[in-house]
Length: 133
Image (cartoon, rainbow, N blue to C red):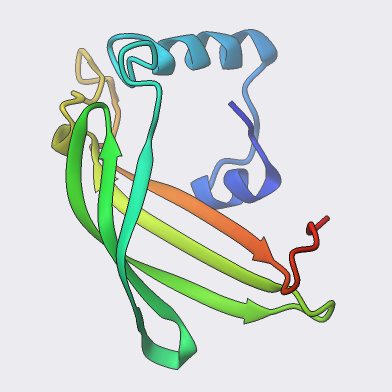
């Protein structure tokens, strides 16, 4: 689990859990009660179509596969050009655990994990095949 500054900002959290807590959360999320990473080692998005969206952005349509369940998805992609000539593509896919056969955790009504969650993707690309740093 990686708690980047961007992830912390997106989540609205102001503090990070300790190393032991992160390790426990990682094990639980990858375990059979949630992602079951042993049985379902891959999460995929396969694009079927890309169209011009509003303001020069893109709309990508395809299928999202998580936990053995495949769902159609439409994902808006924000496109921007960086000063160094690279292109930045940012997308957020909102989906629900229950759509993928995962039951959100609830502990006596005290802790309820939301069903909806976001998958964030950011790609930086440069023309000509050079690696981006």
